Length: 397
Image 1 (tube, helix red, strand yellow):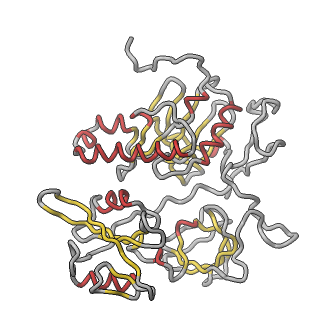
Image 2 (spheres, rainbow, N blue to C red; image 1 turned 45 degrees about the vertical axis):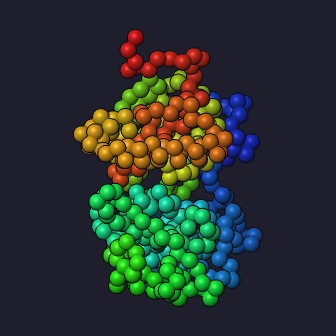
Image 3 (spheres, helix red, strand yellow; image 1 turned 90 degrees about the horizontal axis):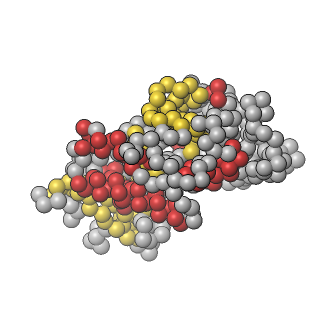
């Protein structure tokens, strides 16, 4: 997508100590560990390797948000536009517009299948009960704000979450299990049944009918983050513009930067000699595959020394600095407990993947604009070239 394509190493992408050195004149390129195959179709059968073709069953999607093409291979679209999916592979799909007949790549999280529940503003796919509460209690939502989500306990079922208020617990969220009828209908209370979830929502918008509140407006949701560029794993240093220094530590600095003049990112610059390039690449390949909404997403790397680590940008900075700020110091106890719960979710995922953080602390937890906490720097402590624990720069003797 308008950047240097990754090149496979001779040993199939694994880092080997027998590889040539990585001087500025002899950079080491590695494949994106999450890539599933080549981008373009294999002329032998007309199907892209590592992809899922729509085949005889044509998949039509509708745009949930506007998207303006950044590269010539992209396809621009407006909310409501319909497209046929030609190649369904990874975060970027190849599609053809039904209106213009133009073809190109589209961000998969900006579209949904036509006539699916995901096209409904009130349906939140794959969200947990706890995250539903976080979103409904966020500023901007009102009494009766609601969402329907997948049930965590019963596969194929749904739950209704509604923002409520009571004097004892103040703002709170109530959850209702949506049960299924044998004929395919839905109900919360047996006295009121519906043939579709749309009918159910319309009914409870007219009156509470036993719910804590009458349904008012769907829960507010922000436009999803555009997926990282296709094939942009090992990137050239020149594609980054370092704009603002955010912090410095024993082994490097952290900068706010812009990638290819259009995407805001965070860049961790490592001091030369602080880690082996080969060890870093081996660890980075593992880190890239750890995808969770409570882990800071690793986007790309620069493998020439000084090594650059490119991640998603978290506007509020570290949890340590945030809690010392005016906004952070005013957070109520329940919100502080929620921060801990979010961190625990991320650490539980790391544990499930048999991975170890090795340096969990408030400085390595980053906070977003919407006060989502994400774990950063997982895995880096293991590859820092230091035989014994070294006191950090800010530590007093």
